[in-house]
Length: 233
Ligand code: ADP
Ligand code: 5GP
Image (cartoon, rainbow, N blue to C red; front, side):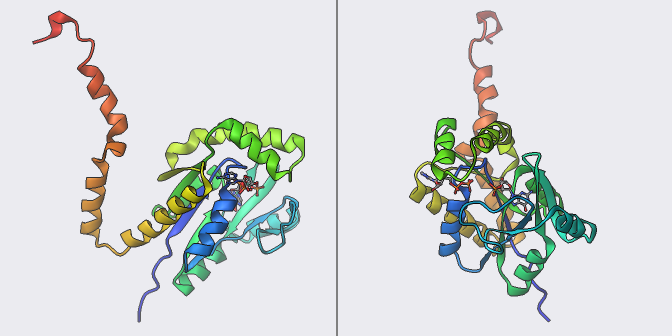
């Protein structure tokens, strides 16, 4: 009997207003066999959101009942206010269908998933700058002023976590970003078809790319600069 293959779990996080939902919607149209994990939340629906499409909107009592029954793979209180959680059943269902799963969750949720599924692929979406983020939040015109202020404040904290993610996607031009996101998802699928040995070769070579070496390069170059004459051999 064929063992079911574990689904690739993709995590996508971003400060609110960065364009993550827009990117996810486009991605889901382009990539087959990729399921979206519809989270449960206690926040109220926004704009045209529908129960069972963007989220399952539930009461605090229902959410806490689900916590007690261990139905969540992860959950968190976001913006110090509402509960958001990923139901375990989405992973099971993706596995049964042989699909991969996309989680749109915050930094706290991403940390919990990485502990439980270390192979999860994480992507952090950034806006080009703060001003653009503020403009996008206002353009969406779905939130009250107080909520926009809270989201901007949260963004400053959230972006500090960028280095916990495997990929960083700067969402400037939408078309380019959709292409890059699609490439990440398809590339990780390709990686999954390689043997452990092939993957090791690829990772080792990848670590030596200029982009990967960047951080380690600076202290080496600095050690060759500004040497006092006497210290030179
Ligand atoms: P998030 O899901 O990250 O909170 P949304 O997808 O709702 O953000 O996007 C916030 C606003 O920014 C929306 O009005 C969306 O149309 C717009 N937007 C998203 N990506 C871009 C982009 N690359 N360029 C310009 N506007 C964008
Ligand atoms: P929004 O209210 O803008 O839809 O989402 C607010 C934040 O909650 C976003 O950062 C989003 O990624 C996050 N979020 C959505 N669903 C979940 C979830 O199931 N778990 C966690 N931890 N965060 C979630």
